[in-house]
Image (tube, rainbow, N blue to C red; front, top):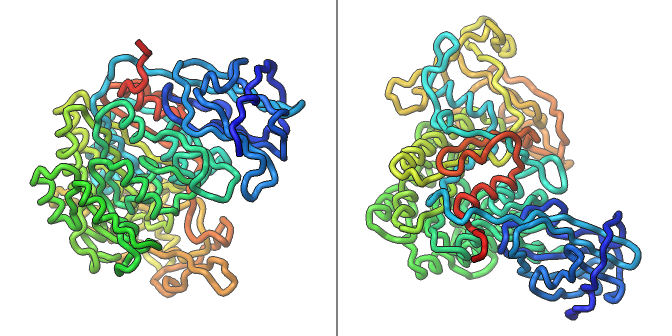
Length: 580
């Protein structure tokens, strides 16, 4: 490996593709002016340095990016050459044409480098992410929480009252389908990427930690000011969505390293599950492969530790400063289990706080910073219960998500310099098609599904006014179904004994219907329509619906890519004003 300034000879014209196989950032990338990104070119084969030239807008690339490149004659594990430049940046907004030549072959990419207003529109941003939240989740949550009379909802969800709306494209760089890692990464960096990737462009090397990085929102805020950052989730705090706020890795499952990245950036508030990746490997329950103790590291760095709802309230009331709350070794339980059924792992973790209380504590702490804050709140279990088609748990968690959103909207009323956003990262193939009425005669549950006029209305009640139905197992329930599924037994009823596990692996390594549900009253076998290598329902490619209120929210309209959402965030905060 050696530096080579000779690569940067000026060349004009832009033609097809060939030996310059990939350019990162990719064509049509949107880049915040002054933000750091890794520039990489992957050639299709082995090339000589003297045969390569790289220009940007016809000038030597180093003049625009501020540094020379490293030429890699052969990448590890790849019989091909590459060019790499870490922590490049483009300071001046504009359109940039990148041309890479290797002999007679040329590859081009065009970048939109954008600045922001000079004056911030918002002091605070509260970003609510309903993981996998689809239209059916919203509709179902409204019906369960508010009820309906003569075709009109008896009340509104908090998200119903957000002022602006946009359809959000969720596809990844390598497929129209997507997962939570690259979708949230696009929200938090402004760059789309591949499935499973966080804060990087996924390159061809095997090492998941060496891919070309792009700046995330936490790094941008640290670089440009003194705003605080908060992360709240019902998942593991190192899971895909919260990890996207801080992490850089090709593989989202590198959770031990993600904890290390989180510690390096030190968000002021971190609340959720996932303590297993903070504990040294000799501690029972640890999932680390080393003896690093990140609970100790965080507390020595000034964080107050909360491990259950009681200590979270105590820490929140103690003016503690930075807060680390870890309430489960893995993902936290659904609100249906935590608050009502006491199933799942509630017996092991009986005092888990809810999303509402975590949001209240986070807001109270972050609001102490006179410079403002960015808070990400994830309703993770909407997705985690939608995959196994456990619809009652998914809808109850949508209600909890909405109640936490109401807390944020009430905060924004008192602090009108706050932008509030509620969006999914992706959607699920789920619809409500009517009701299921146990009182209809016969044993065939399929005939108890009411459609059109026969659907009537469900008979959930909320006599205590807590926003949740008094009972989940009422006699006339919502009929909720997925349009994709593995082989499984449809039970037609709420899963009262614990979360649903629809398919299990057989001796051939294929997923088959879980026979544990075979003998339940009315259960029928449904033959799946997705590959047998898949054990749950999968994400949909459908657009997500984003809504927002507050300063800067008017920018959300029509169709937008997830990478466009980041641009609205940094423009609201004015993170790249014009040089003076």
